Amino acid sequence: MTQTFCTLLLIFLFSSLSQAQLDESKKAVADATQEPVKINTAEDHSLVSVLGYHDFSSTKQATEMCLPTDTFRSQMQALKDLELKVISLGEFLAWKNGTLKLPERSVLITIDDGWKSVYHEAYPVLKEFGYPFTLFLYQDFVGPKKLALNEALIKEMMENGASIGSHSVSHPYPSTIKKYIEQGGDAYHDFLTTEFTQSKAYLDKTFKIDITTYAYPGGFHTPEMFEVATTAGYDLLFTVIPGKVSKKSSNLTLPRYIILGTHDSIFENATSFPATATSAASLGAKIQSTPYPVTPPAGATIDERLPEISIDLSTVEQLDPESVVMRVSGFGKVPHTYQPESKKFSWKVNRRLRKPTCDITVSWKLLDAESYEKPMSWTFVLNRQAAYLPTTAPSLPEPKTQFELPNSSN
Ligand SMILES: [Zn+2]
Image (cartoon, rainbow, N blue to C red; front, side):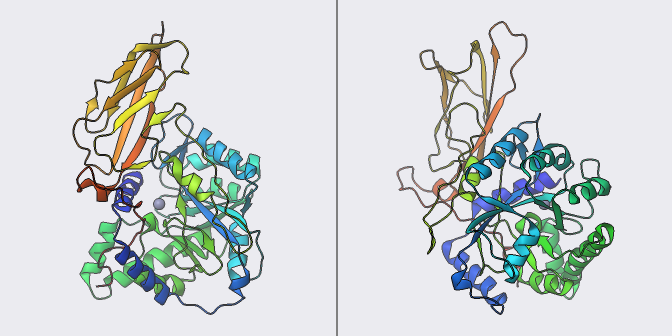
């Protein structure tokens, strides 16, 4: 359920708002969150990239919310290669409170929901690298659900580098939030109070710790949540709006990069740092989740509504080209062409793509093999703004991402 929810959110994410709306919502957030400055932020040039993960698997195919364990390992290795310090939630809090100085560039690893795969897939990798990490847990999932972590596993991880924060009681869908807003009166306020205070009380009691951090489920936040969260005792609240955290970022809407299994560019952006007054810009790591070259690349945003989709299988030894099957979402099995010299398989989309994302799966057999190899899948994104323009229109800037419930304050 949660994965479907998150997928819907991502579709919403890519649908994006206009720049004017973005500016207005940013201003609203800034107005609502002015705080006294404790130290001279002008002299603190540190930036923190907060990474947000969900589910992991070493057997299943990558999906937006489920990252192959191998890719996760490559990403953790990349953090080491880039010499980015991975900090704990405690260090992050101390830095935001003005009691700790951080290196100029560091990374905070967070994992939402509490999937059981965290313990079996991600935790061994994190332990191997000695990286601290943070679990944002939601009460209705943890413990009772088969696919979720139980309290014993969480406690074990807490003894080995894990911190925890709240991710609500029920992980409410936007439709649920909207329902309470529309009820009027105290309904929405009461609903929010339960989500923030009850989840904190549960975690405080179960894990004997004072929880002060929260990740908005799906990144959704409304101005009403800020006061409720502060009253409930939260200091830091994380969104899914990509960007680096600086000392002066609002503690109520902290940016975070949600690392999707099908969008390679996000990790690269998350590990790229802009120039500051004291250091030059640095490029992030490109971790390709597709083992063979493909077009459009995994996670790329394109304007073209009739793109050519291709995969280069020239490095697959003993490939049986006759066995190759290409499937494209919305089209099913497609009649690809094959170039024997380059071992490239391609198909030009013949009906304009209308959905925000396009999924491709290619499967093949090796010569003399009985069964198919593990299929390869990837996803690319259609620029929504370009969808309704003539195909000759100049390309538009990448849509910004933002989670705001429309009319939530009305
Ligand atoms: Zn979640």
